[in-house]
Image (cartoon, rainbow over all chains, first blue to last red; front, side, top):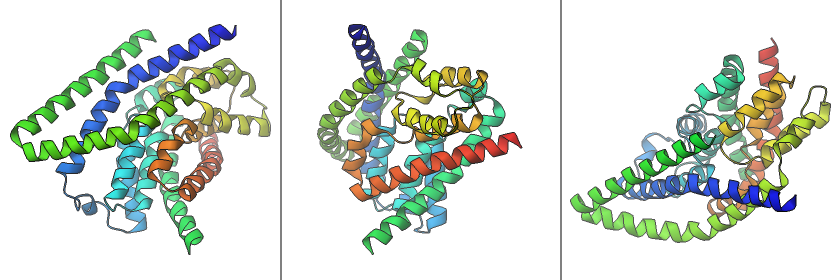
Length: 143
Length: 168
């Protein structure tokens, strides 16, 4: 019984690894190229420092992008190093997981159009609120 | 399922090969950029590699602890507060891409699970315990704690709003 569970868990972990490895290599290559090819001030064109618009832009990019959340943390961390605001980065990493533009057809097919569209819109808006609240809370702690 | 996995792996390798090709082209036509990117890539890989080992170890243990049938048992209609808690904890514990969970969630929906629990489950998947080391690597501990707390609170809020809108 336990042997079977461990065997299944090993198989699933191996499958996840197999599935994720090429994406990870590709993403690392992409991130390395983008970080060095894109001027440091490029992202500042999209991120103005305004809490509301920064959250909106970050959430939009996160909603469109897809992949393993590790990728969003890596990109988010690198964006942060490039002086992009924490509000935008937070909204970006939250929508990456909670809003699924790419997966939407599958979600509509399995869970229904009404549910999928409502859930994605609500999740998008809440990600922006979380981004703002998280940074306000953090600032209060360090104040 | 196996066919889908193979398709995904094929797509993954295609993406990887395209990126390698682009990287090589950059190296040939803009060697200074290629070299800078390569050095950045090596540093980034060195930083990420040990964390990845930890991530997959934690993922392995999650697969052992979490069985899909267990979730079905406790997310039925009339589950009350227990249902909410299980939706959040189940979402946090669930691993793998969300589309792998769609068939199970569709089954739950057909079995009478309310929409707000499904929405809560999906939203709470944003909390990835096995990936915490990487999140901590890039962000401060207070930020990670604050974000996690907000994600839990907003999982409930998301469920309530989605449930109310759909029911109306």
